[in-house]
Length: 560
Image (cartoon, rainbow, N blue to C red; front, side, top):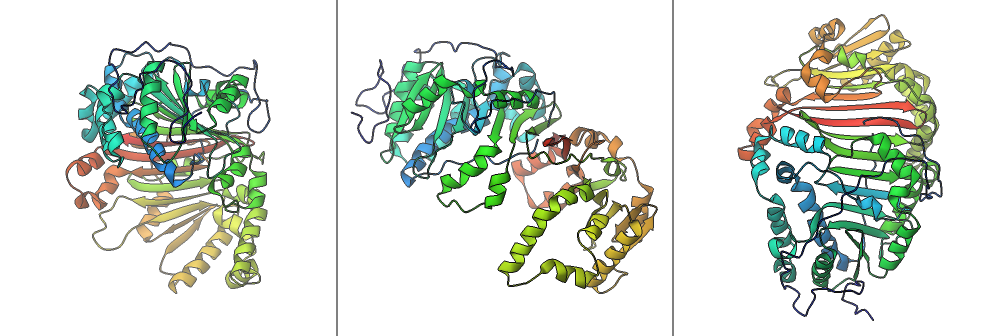
């Protein structure tokens, strides 16, 4: 019988004794078997959390829209357990910079998804032994950042990070465990966590897979580690070079689910990750069809999300954090989402801004998007109005502005709209900014803009706005309105091409030139923080729909 305060560990030889802080022999290690990460295939698919077995053909893509990974709340007694496992994740994730420079360029081996259940609806993975290309790119990119490049030559920065994490654990039992003797001999390079249906606030149905170099040594160390947490019970099971950690009483059921089919055998998961491409140093996957319905059960409230939105949520999201020699990128894909008609984007109006642009935001196809979004948007507006005691907010807006919704809103948003700000010093206390709208009825859009300006400032002369063909130019100064009209070659600059990339089909794109913007904030920071900020060059976002219910997304941060 397992004691209430002891982790439930499978039988077998261990190094465990009554001394919870006894060191583990440093030489008790064995090599981790090397395998190739599974690629999408149609063979032997297992049902996903939705019960579906169909997989969309994998397509080469980079890019994504991300959903937040679900947290795993529980009793307060679990907080220390979460902290301990979180410390391992921190060691793996943040210690990667130094390890990249020292490791061999293998990047192979089993993945956490190989030992986690195939019915999971959420998954996150951290890997400091990615592909050879990722290691090389990481070293080159991080070498541009003065604040972190010194760590590239360290023997094992994971040790320092572990010591920082254990120091803040607030538990003398944990603090007695040392990295060299109690962690380094068994800790591998990868960690993954999966969330399955059926979780509750008291016992979330989660599983964490920690790669280990020696199962016996790892089992002993983790047994003593979790024994430090007297307030909760944790199961530890070993499988194929991984320690699978679950809430107490769920370890056997979790491994039984893996035997029926791992996440790596889930056809939707492998198809989505295949479409994502390079997995980088971290990746995540979320099945919205099941996950959106399950998340409210974990917080114990069940009413935090709109029931209609939960019922209609479909599709899956896959994302990866990866490196290029010039930038670090968060990229991903959305697949199988609500199959509304895809709206083709075009970001040429962003690329045609003046080259001295400091920051800009572009949205393309908003008028078409509004056609499908208006019923739900109207419902939300009516709900807010009713909660505030108003009868018909839309009718009030139409009367006050002399507009007809949604028709005039479509005219105002246009086929595309772009908001931009040029390089400036901000010393005068004012700022220069402007916008251009490509509309199906530019004159009508200009009339609405004039009305909005008068309502907000009391004068139609406060802002310059003019119509040229199918475009409306709006700016805080006449000169900048002329600059927007004349255009330029922002899209030809190196910073833009690296940060944003190809915008010929973009629905949403953002560009921020940090070298121009840093004059606003560098004076307020000092030391390493200032050095780090100076080493950043630009930020870019690029999102596009690639088909009905499918899309891509990238967020890039460039280094100087």
